[in-house]
Image: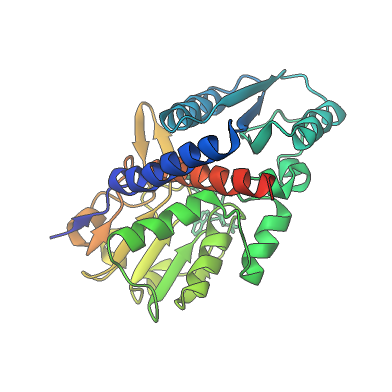
Length: 281
Ligand code: NAP
């Protein structure tokens, strides 16, 4: 029987702790700072993500300041808007949603968001700190995957883990987190020949490619644990990176939707709490 690694109970546990922490902070300090959610242009996926973050934030009594920049925003204006939020003592956390309009460099937020307010944990400074093993604010998506493993009691120490995908937001930081927990990690990517040769030897396979069906049933063993970070819209249907046949074979797997994605927002809130506490130190 394949164990479904549902994200909702994991997210609930993280958010319950965050809600208590926010309430305690408010009691001790009289008020709490806000979270800034920034987007530029009118991409519907950024709006949908903003609404989801706002819902999660509201559920734990965190105020959200929504910063909507026009589609025509120029790089200097974008930088100014972020710098203003960096300097604002009433804002403890900032997240900039992708995609950004084409005149902006999509990696710019990772350079200019203040690392102390970077609740997505993806600024270059925080990625560097993660590599050094001293991160306070960690990349939210891979951290969510690690929380799922922990919640379901799946050990990583000494395990052979294959991470498919090497982006700075999912694959690479996930590999770093796994190494910190003493897993043996292989990173595969689009130039890896014979992906199945690697995945068929893995205890845990983490998928972060955005290529549906990249992992099929014949590429894993019966005990393999699959963490699927992939999100691809097929009409109204959301698909992960794993082929549906993998659900018949894997030892355990995160569903899409309802798996890793659900936990990402909860980690954002946990990071917000950490940033908020740091803001008064
Ligand atoms: P990305 O920047 O496009 O990176 C995709 C990675 O997949 C790249 O490293 C690429 O290799 C690799 N890849 C592409 N085709 C491959 C193939 N045929 N075989 C092996 N590797 C292949 O994407 P991302 O931002 O990391 O996101 C990955 C997925 O996670 C997307 O579906 C995204 O929507 C989803 N996501 C989910 C969450 C969540 O909350 N669950 C959050 C963020 C992203 P190269 O480096 O060689 O190009």
